[in-house]
Image 1: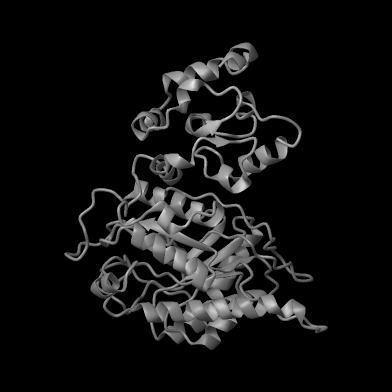
Image 2 (image 1 turned 90 degrees about the vertical axis):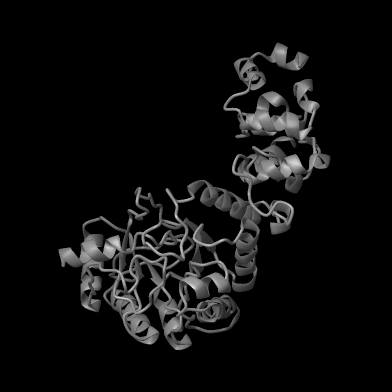
Length: 419
């Protein structure tokens, strides 16, 4: 059992779409575990393991030969397969020892998609039958029947189907046995189940329908293994958010685990690009940016030196400076250095008085990035020059001379008011 656990936990570390949030499944009477609506907090190890979840594959035996996958059938690696009972016992024992709060279970395709999906569903169903109310995240196997996907959603808090490769052409080149249709089909089944669940409370019934994947569904895209630019990747992600109702799209910098002439030669995973994509994804989900505002045909890739919001601001000087005392919430959100919570605090605070420069730090604003784009009492006049060639070096510098002076005088109202 220890050998299996070592092999199958290591085999699962490349899947980063394992965080949990949004489930509202309660502890069953006399049972154990709780997947609270607020989600489970996780910390991630350096190799990508999610510490508070038992993150394993049911099997690393796989019939596919995907060029980018460590578990492809042509790799000479140790292979192992759990039984349903073994996964159930491991989960319950780890939970009783307070080592985990839930289970993330995926698998290689060791048989038909339906056979693999049925094994995963049996694990989740058995855990629920034995009173486990903790978090369960199941990987939906492409090609599995809609009925099995539906059964999975009735037991799991979250389901995910990994697209992996951002385009059909690249997928055919690196994984010729796969296609987008087999991935999008289970996504659609999950989407339909979630929509039906949302409509259920409006029906008059003494027995409400069982929860269906209350934490939604996610997917993962590998970044850097194929030539698609950031514009292509973000358009795909935006389409999945709007078309399939995904909770999250995870971006994974390509790790060269295999030698294959179809794959690029990288000295290290493209972690900076991965980080920029997450920042752009955040802008789309919480800051009301569209893909075309973040990247476009003239700027198809994200700026490696600046975060996407700062890069957008430099390309649109006509939108600045922003008067924090009069601008609406959506406009304030577009100022670099101001997040959702800071923007909310600014809108609330200005009801009671004028927002001034000396208030911004206490409101959570990142002064170095924000001040060049603001108009408010106490701002230094030298920041009114919004030419990109002037502002970009200030944003790139670790600590500009002007900001250092300003911060050292932050608690000196006389000098700030003169500014």
